[in-house]
Amino acid sequence: MKSKALFLDRDGVINIDHGYVSKIEDFEFTEGIFDFLHLFINKGYKLFIVTNQSGIGRGYYGQDDFEKLTTWMLGEFEKQNIHIESVQYCNHAPEEHCSCRKPATGMVDEILKKYEIDLENSWMIGDKQSDIDLAHNSMIANTIGIGTRNICESRFTFTTILECKNFFEENKAII
Image 1 (cartoon, rainbow, N blue to C red):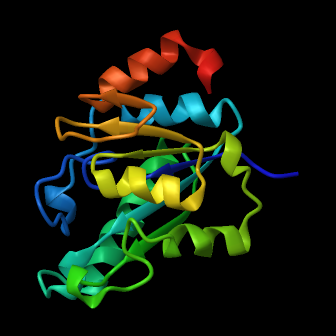
Image 2 (image 1 turned 45 degrees about the vertical axis):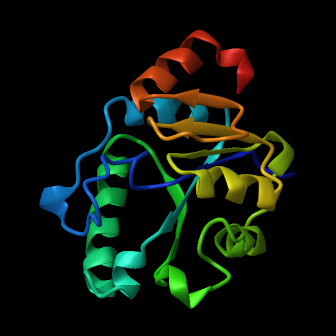
Image 3 (image 1 turned 90 degrees about the vertical axis):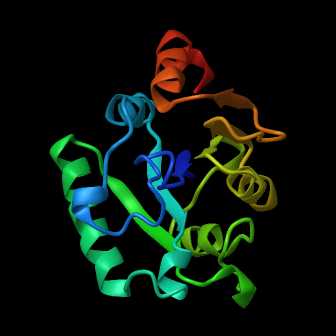
């Protein structure tokens, strides 16, 4: 049986985007993210992170920095009883024109090789147009845009994760 999934961008969704976050001391979870994820977990969703990390390709931080931060972040999620199935990332600079940088589908394609996902009943949440475009390109049916940027063709848009969490708490039947 296929699983429903919630695909999450990292910077701007899971954590406050301070620009090329690569150190634990600079990582700040967004308000409400843990409770928001529990709403989806309680409805049977598997959680996946899909994140562009061009800071690696641009030389702003190294692969080891990213892996150390990711290990720490996953540990913090586990302390909150939140299991992330997989973290997929693109470490290329935009000018490399790879197949994994959002909105290209490479990261979701990798997940689909290992997991049977019901894309028609899955969600993508992101803070940039490329996140929503990834969802459309990958056939992920439902989208949530977060932040103050102009994001087109998203099913829902909220200024903050907390606002989004509050909406979904009040409207649990949607997920």
